[in-house]
Length: 256
Ligand SMILES: Nc1ncnc2c1ncn2[C@@H]1O[C@H](COP(=O)(O)OP(=O)(O)OP(=O)(O)O)[C@@H](O)[C@H]1O
Ligand SMILES: [Mg+2]
Image (tube, rainbow, N blue to C red; front, top):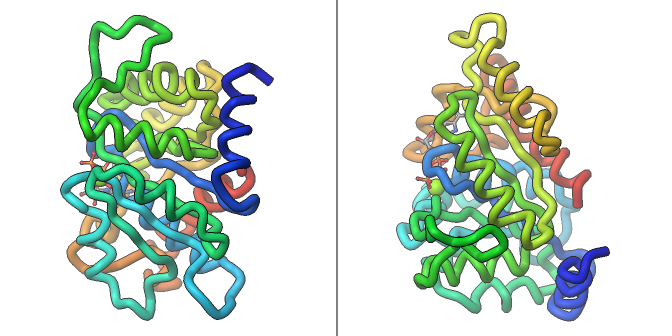
């Protein structure tokens, strides 16, 4: 164990109940699917949780100032939302306190694409900058047991995924899991693009979810329709769409 993992372990044990795990969905590049993944993974995890009286053991947390997670979740009928949610709107202190609640077991935290990065930060230096948004992100990272890093078959997100892993997660010894999002089975004939992104991830030795989250129109409208995958129909495309997120939730649990 390196010194930093030893330190993290000491902090973690002191800070919260033994069964609690914090999962952060993080990727420097905006639009790779962080919010979609945070909400739907929380839905799958909450739907599979042991049923009991009391609050949901799964909490989705939104940390961006726009509160997009809140807007989405508040549009879902309360009786079908299988998790609780909280928004910090960039304020620090809220999550650190909440994770001490022994009835909560999983926190899945959505983060904003980070704009405030110091391009001149040396290797080994924290590139996150000094803004309140960066402080909020640092709080989440201090609590995190696992990071989920979304990447798309389109190359536009690859450099930022690597940056997020190499400059933000690895220096903090945070385990991570890469998930390919927005694979389009109709357009990517022969899975050419999918194979390329898988090879790129595997060359770097990054752990990844075996199969991608496919791109489906149903996800694009989920936000305005107040839908989560666990409420999708159990047939046809909707079932495939739901299965993709179930797989992410299952892989995530195996890494915790
Ligand atoms: N698998 C998918 N299939 C279809 N549409 C998707 C899929 N994943 C995400 N989207 C859509 O892509 C857009 C970006 O997704 P999302 O908002 O989850 O990304 P984000 O990383 O949270 O973005 P930001 O950095 O702006 O917060 C949204 O319109 C969302 O509906
Ligand atoms: Mg988002």
